[in-house]
Amino acid sequence: MIFGDTTLIRQLHGEEICRRNGFVRTLFAAWLFFGLLLCHYAACDAWTGKVVAVPEGDLLVISRDGQEKKYRLFGIDCPERGQPYWDKAQGLVGFLTEDKVVDVTPLFLGVEGFEKVLVRIEGTRDYLNQQLVAYGLAWVKVGECNSRMCSDWKKLQKMARSRSVGLWADPRPIAPWDWKRVQWKEIINGREMRRKEAR
Image (cartoon, rainbow, N blue to C red):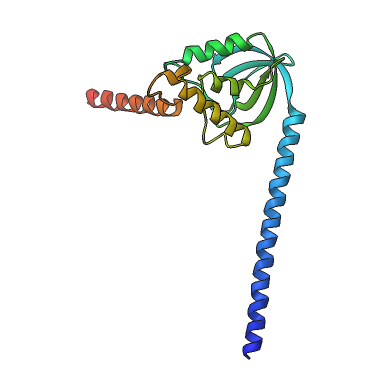
């Protein structure tokens, strides 16, 4: 009876290990497939276009095959309109890209409806996304940017901050996502005050 029980336990334990190993293999295969798919997608779907306008530092209007469309730079966030350094970020991107040919690597559709992209100005080595971080004119978006490339951008951000480059000259710069949250609170509070005054 005892022998039979230990055999059963070993069998159950062995099945559990097999299940775990099977899950790990499946997870690894899915990860590998996704990685290859992403590499294939990035390489095959990269295209060339011409920048026709720069509404914001991280938002470009790019012309491709006679059609103009807005694209948001992946993994970074430039200061919003009304924030310090908004005009500098927008001005630099306009200076570097307007009327120039760029290589665009689309990654995914963002929540705003703009496609998130990597942009490289023709003839340059680094992505524009990375250049803005190095110039101290953009934050790395922590929730969005988690790849190995992003860890390099985070190092550049740390370096720009330590040298007080661009927006990091401000001892307490406000990240765009925090600034937007404050703006929304002010708008909501203003509406509530107007409602109370109207009563």
